[in-house]
Length: 94
Image 1 (cartoon, rainbow, N blue to C red):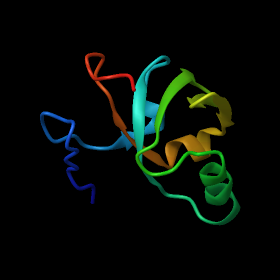
Image 2 (cartoon, rainbow, N blue to C red):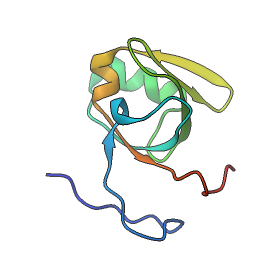
Image 3 (cartoon, rainbow, N blue to C red):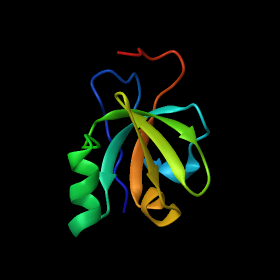
Image 4 (tube, one colour):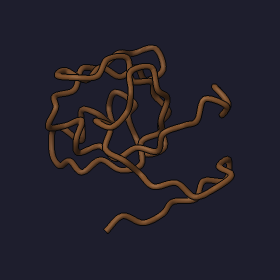
């Protein structure tokens, strides 16, 4: 069961969605990663941790995200297991 998450910078509660529901160019923050072992460790080592802000550069297999200055390719299976909080276009970019 997904819980509504409230972030201090949000004006209303938002529900996390799978990364695979984002459009290319969209900004989001990682909510949870339903991964274990090596996949989880690798993403965390790349800076993709809870609340990290990223941009989806390309949708489809591979899903390409940019975290800070690094672009990472994710398989469809991994991308689907990442729940994210999409940012609205009017939210800050810092």
